[in-house]
Every structure is written in structure tokens, then in C-alpha cells.
Amino acid sequence: MRDRLSHFYRASALLLACTPCLGGDDAGPFVRALWLVQHYGVPDAVQPQNDQKTKGKLFKALGKGFVLKPEGVKGLLEPATFTKLAGADHQLDAAEIRKLVETDQPESRMQLHPKTKAHAEQLTTSFDMIDAPHREGGEKLATWIRKNYKPGEPLHVTVVCTGNSRRSILGSTMGNIAAAFYGMPEIRFHSGGTAPTAFNPRTIAALSEIGVEITPTGAEAARGDAKTANPIYTVKWGSNLESTEFSKTYFDAANPQKGFAALMVCSEADEGCPLVKGAALRVSMPYLDPKIFDDSPYESQKYAERRDDIGRLMLCVMMQARNQLSRTER
Image 1 (cartoon, rainbow, N blue to C red):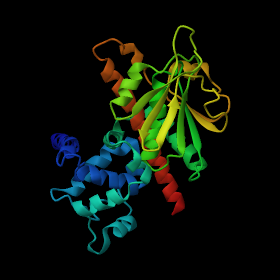
Image 2: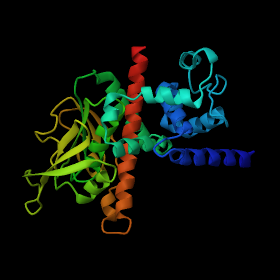
Image 3: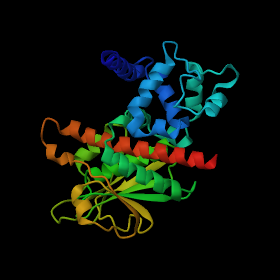
Image 4: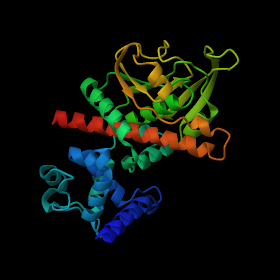
């Protein structure tokens, strides 16, 4: 029995990995079905701790013909929801799933740079990689967003780390991408630190790798260290989706001053700022600093790893917030 289950999950993982290559940029029927569940699924099915189980069950439900039927989606979709989506024939084939997923895309997702959008799509297939401490922090943030979000009105989140050069900027940028991906671009992520330095070139490289355009403005912000230049950059993740970024304190005038959520992404800032002035919510979610791999053969891989760890969490948070808001509206 254990061997059969092991084979089943290996097959599921293989299909998940291979579907994006079936048609060039086409994510494939399994991934599209996963996105369908992520949008319309019951709350338990879209919890990151249940993500692997959901993918396994969905793989089995689709079968060789890539068709979803009522008996296969029990525990994934509410019967009434599936009936509404499936129509008179009470089933969803690959073409119907594709149409539902494609018409579900918000305008701000379509504004993302193509490479950035594709990378975000890839990260949505791996929510099972979010560890328990970050899941808990993410749940707090998603709940806060649900309680405070008003369509069209700005809602601010500041990502805080000591030097405001690596994790905090990765967090703010991936947060902004996630907000646009799920149709809530008015949720704006900012970055700040406790002892500013400069926007690190390795951080720039990691974000540029996924299609984010980062351009120096030619201006310089106040220096945290007299010997270290602090250039100001324009960071653009899509059409009409951009911010100005530089290293600064979290309470800098460029950042929100009150009513924001503060995400503490490094242990030093987390320990050093038990209270964040002006914050309506403080969430502890420290990540290992990729700086420890600087100038090693693994440098670029580790910056990409941290970018994706944070990005995966931000996307999951925005998905949860969107789903919670949708259920409230129904």
C-alpha cells in the first residue's frame, strides 16, 4: 500500500512539473485545474498545509481524460459551486476548465510583465513548500487584509529588516506582485529597516531575473553609512505597476506612518523592534539572510531561493485574502 501511494505522489509531482512544457507557455490541464480549485475551492482545500493532499486528490479526480466530475471533487469544491461551474452535463473537461481559469484573471494580473506573471504562476503550484511558522504569519496577514481591505482604497504593508537591502526589498516587491496577481493592486507593500545601507545589487539581480525592471533614477537618498552610496531606483513589475525604492528606515517619510501592517522578515529587526511605531499589525516571519552566501558559488541560487520563499508566501496570503473576501460577499 505504501509503495502504491509513493508511486501515486511521484506521478502527481511529475505531472505537475511537466505540464508547463506541454504547449510552450501553456500551464497544462493539471495546473489549470489546481488554479480552479485555488479560486473556487472549499477553505480546507486551499490551506497551504493541505496543498500536497489537494494536489494528490485533484490528480486522481482528473484521471487520464482530464475531466472533473462531482464524485471526484468532493472535499475540493462545494457541490453547489461545482454544479454552477459545470452546467447541464455535470462535468468539466480540460477546455472548460481552461476557459474558466482564463476568464478569472483580473486586469492587474494581465498588467504584470509576462516573465513576472509566469514566475508568479509557477510559485502558486508550490504552496506546500511554505513552512509552519510562515504559514501562521501569513494567516494573520490574510485575516488583517480581509478585515481592512476596501476596493480601490490603499492598504499598506511595510516589510522590515535591519539593513533594508535584501529580504525587506524582496518582500515588498514580491508582495506587490502578489497583490497585482490576485487583483488587489491597491494593497501596496513598502520596505524599511532599522539601520539602512543600500539596495543590494544581488537583490536587484534576483528580481531582474523574473522580469522586474529596476532602473536607477540618478538621485541618491540619505545615507545610513557615510561611506555607502544609497541610490534611488524605480522598480516596475508591470504596466502602471511601479514604486520608488531605496534603503531607508521603516518610519521614513516615504513609507506609511500609521495603520499599516509590519512584517518582520529578519530576526534582528524582529528582536530589536518589539513595537513598530504606527503599525496596526505586527507579524513575525523571519527568513535566513541570503547575505551569508555572498561571493560563494551558490550566491545567485540562494537569493533566488529567498525571493521565491517570500514570494510563495505573499501569493498564498493574497489568495487567502481574496477567497475570504469572496466568501464574505456571497
